[in-house]
Length: 301
Image: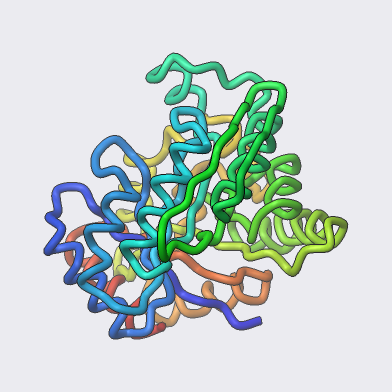
């Protein structure tokens, strides 16, 4: 299976011009998609609209927009606006996020998140195509229409790690993006689970986009310790804990792809053989390691 290459760009502390320069270098190197995260700084969709003019052909993706704070009509309007501004180069990723953010920070209930995401995606899909929509679920109501000249429906994916979310992704969207899932988890759980759902729904083979921390480094142990200090708390979140347990990993640091160029290339081959359709490079480590890793990703593409 051919595996595309995506590049996640750390946006924190960077200007549009700086991010645009990285995106242009990625486009020139043949990277398939640039990915941004929706966190507490830049709004990822607005950021894509700002960076896209520095490029002409490369795709852009957000992984992912939490569904709870944005009504489907509001998100459809924003996503289609980005489509019009970028020449229809957006992949829209959505997901439930985590209780400590949605409940702890926003004060929103995450009761039965998979059921809520299903309703949300059922309502969002027609809105993205510009169709008149009158959707009434148990918790999601969306009545209206969003039409923007020149905007096509963006590719829609769902962040999924558990069986219910993977079923939603396979039945209703173009695929899924994962976090902290190594090639063994993709091959033995994620790929067969999402494929079954897509086949049952009569949909084409779904994408599986595997995001992983990567560092071309001569000191993997130090980099692994840095990842643990920065991302270790993710291992305490139920959804991430479950996928880590499936792979027999103690924490996020154990899912990182670390080592010299040859070592990393071998691990990428494992991801491809496991059924990954796109490997998403998330360069980490020291400034020098991030630069070296990014250069490797550009060369590898």
